[in-house]
Length: 162
Image (cartoon, rainbow, N blue to C red; front, side, top):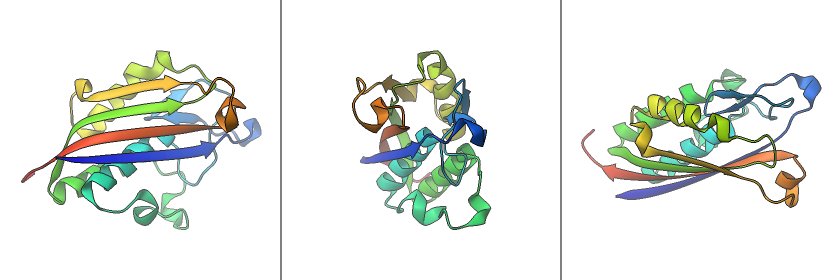
């Protein structure tokens, strides 16, 4: 068994930037998306880094550098599928995934099941293998000031002949 941990954070873009807010591929009703090179899906990025950590394959900055124009506005669920393919090729498979999204706003509970379904479908696992929680920081720090969102993911992976 192997455990991997991933964290990602992005600042909110200005409302004028017109970026959608995406979490696990779900479009969240919010006036501001997140700043960054790809589609800035902070949850998918945290999951990718957790899988890469358990697989000992580096991190998403190594695989999909923000200096590479091929990844500008890239679909993070497609990148996640590629990361999991690489992990399986290295001899590990995903057993369980648990995530926390830290955001003062927007309120995310109504999107939870759709996020779980998207991650499960992308990773070819069951929805029961995906946990997602959200929390605020009680108005503390950059999250509490609504300057950005942080996501954390933990994976349990099993060595196998996948």
